[in-house]
Length: 278
Image 1: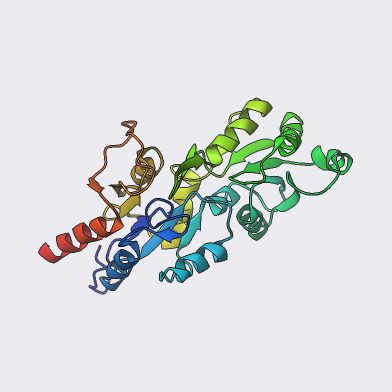
Image 2: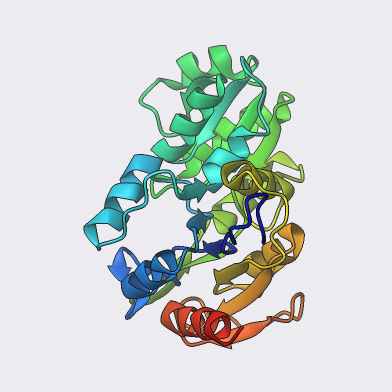
């Protein structure tokens, strides 16, 4: 990827977090060193996660804690969802603080949260003024919150999901993900949600904006799901490296990977050895 002054800018590496860098913030073997090696060789490593619950600073601090500086290098599905909102748009949040942060930075207005302490009467008074319901993973999901969001949707609010991942990888195995929660809201509200995160266009725009480039043909997307990470790689024109360190779901044959790797360290070995032989 030559520049106008003759230097060569190395293609970026896009990394999923959960199942690629860590599992519940426990680093996967070799991942920290892999990021350092790629950066030392001149690759920008951008973390592209469908996790919308935590704020960006929380995710950056968690990465720093395991030895990966990441200020300015984290793109979340909450930020992607915020790109679908207009300044001043009134939003009901069914999700974590990361969604609230992204909405407020966009200039939209958080009217309420489905898990807030307001009374049902107080919520009913504002439900008809809600333009959009934004849903992401939240451990506080319950029937009362589902009812509140459904009330707003049936009153005309649109439904945005930060992501539709059905499961989430942990060291103990898979647990229900944001997509499983979103399915309840979509079913109760009788609407099809707009998805913001991988592999959809809003996340693609977020990544291109952050990198300030349009050509990702030399880039790799490292992820553990072909249905999200693989499809996202194709959306932005990058190569897809399927990691076997996370969900490791059976391929749904949506996207054939350009490489299959045990972990991020193996992808780094491949990228760096290919560059050395060029």
